[in-house]
Length: 186
Image (cartoon, rainbow, N blue to C red; front, side):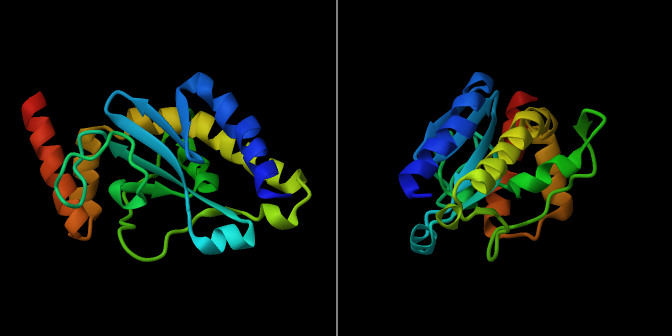
């Protein structure tokens, strides 16, 4: 499958069907804004990915009032994975859904270093495996994301990062922002 064909499959199997849930496509990425919660299906843009004809995805969550790493107000739906406290491999997300709610999830710092992703090697696939993988991601996003956006409130984010964070620079900024937001919401 060529890159242009892959983009058509991405649109047909992910972007178009998920638009009814409020997902918006921007540069091969998908974003869903609900209240202050932002969900993003981010795609790695490495040169290797293009050469290997591979798409690598991570599912990320943040709140729109969080600042960037320079302590400036970030755009509501940023492209950078480092601006999202929560990163989950899309194919693993459904493991946290039990009886129609989120269970067993906890914050895991993935602030530096290796990020696990769902990789789709479309260059070596005539289409069936690529379509199967894209459909699995769509199913996961359709079911998991609305539940997680309801679950991952600013209060929950503050508790989770305080308890399980690694005191990273970005986490310090996020904790400041969550405390300030909750104090204002009071």
